[in-house]
Image (cartoon, rainbow, N blue to C red; front, side, top):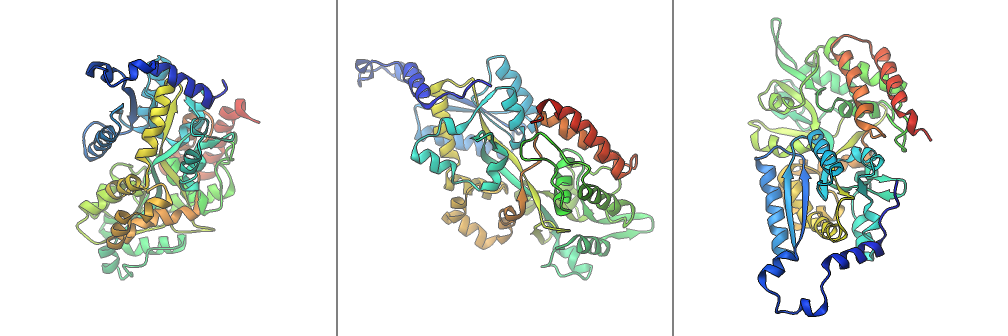
Length: 440
């Protein structure tokens, strides 16, 4: 991989691009000349066009440009995380890519291996810059810290939490203020919460989605069973660890043995809707669904950490900002200015309040806005508090194919085509083959 651009080179390049002799910088510059001196940066953001998230991001861009009239920021809404990664990589390799993109934090290895991104610590070198980099929650930094460099800036970050219907708890004889704290309680509660009319299930006790990001939900179960699915270097996975086999068996048993979970593969996108419609009493999903559920639930609901087996645990999740090598030195400097602005405590707090994602720095939780929000809605702190038990999301070299090897086998088990041990042995063999070129 080429050596990262040095700070001196960045500054020299920025000065060269600015290229103004002292006399040209005089107040007599015409308006068109001033306009032409603007630095333009474009960033890809993982959401379909339209909707409340785009309005929030558009508002941030407009506010930033008011405060920084010398920088033009253009958000581009690129679809899902997978769509955004594909578009950013394709555009960058064609020489017309964005300067920044919010991509899954776990994509860092692939972006580094393709020599597409720059480490932020090579650009953020002042004492103020270093304090900024040190200000994020360590749990959110781990996926982006590779080979001694920081490649990702936390923004749209999450953990998996449990949402539960307090009214359903009440009518099932359960304490509506007490979520299940262990796997045993999780099963027992789900049995009490499940409702049937003859052969038809009118309300499931629990639902864990297995489309979209099955490896992520499974990783939570594996952590709780004492398994770590990958090493810290992204070169080895432990898919068939005994704890992982126990975790997958538990997930399967909820549907086939206890019959408190819908059979087969539950859809990621419909899980919050099923909860809101009363079809299920407890769901596991991202804290990023918090604002949606709060706005639309017609019943009192609770938010809780995931239950423990050998330990508590959830993987972190969500997206980081990444800086592409195609950015000119002036664009790199402008990108750093924008990132420090958009991740400031006040904006990180507001982003968390507006979306349900976890505000990414302790300082954000000390702002007046966040303190007032928590006073009226304490459940918003659950995902943050769970960071104490969180581990980095599963991330390796060739990450998409390595995780797909696991996803395919998880779905084979949940649809009854394979037994847990055989499926995870197959996933392990496939992933080991894919990672062989990266072994260290």
